[in-house]
Length: 290
Image 1: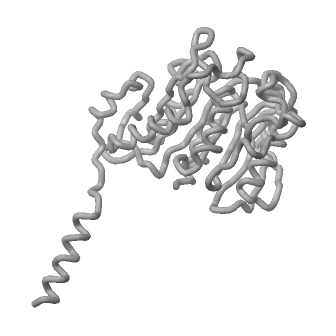
Image 2: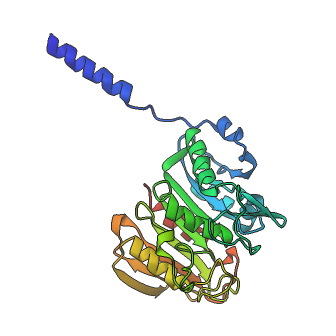
Image 3: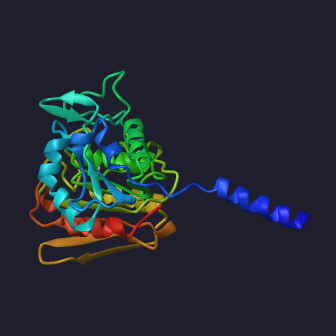
């Protein structure tokens, strides 16, 4: 009899300690402050969905980024949520992101007291997961230009929260080194774990040139950024191959924890979202989860 009681108590303890599966509360999404910058897929599921955090370029905003990227249509086809928040620093007719120690496109460092955008985006993801509509194991980040640089920073700071990142014309791996700006300052990006990465860029981009140079926030090349991420993700082998007649991919494989490091480069591609294949972007994201 005592053994039966012990078994019953163990079963009860298991039931109490096991969380119930969250149910998606769409009304909770509608109560978010960022609700106007959130796209639900046309056939939103009643259970948890993947989430793509989409970050706008400098002096732009989330509403414009949603339109320019076309990711809402991709989300409708594949069934994921998109949120496109605004940066924390007003600039021009929009906003810029607070990347500590790095000048914004205005030429000035982020002002003292500016919103901590890493903390804000972390909190935004947590609030979305709390609605029961977002699968916390399938949260991804992408962004254009300054949003791509912010996406890179999320990979450095929040590798445990995002399953993969995909910077667009903005791949970074930390700040430019003060001693040699053509190289990465390794102390400025130390992710807690490996994170899969796929960048998109154009070889005719004169704003953030893949060969390096440019503005003080840029300076080192895309190849230098890829090498640093390969070191961080403990990759073993470099590769390069053609995707099609106008796009090639270069990167590293044999990385730890199932991570990847790659950049897809569009020949004659400029500084815009046009270098991105949205279906390839989602195919990459969908292969990874935390």
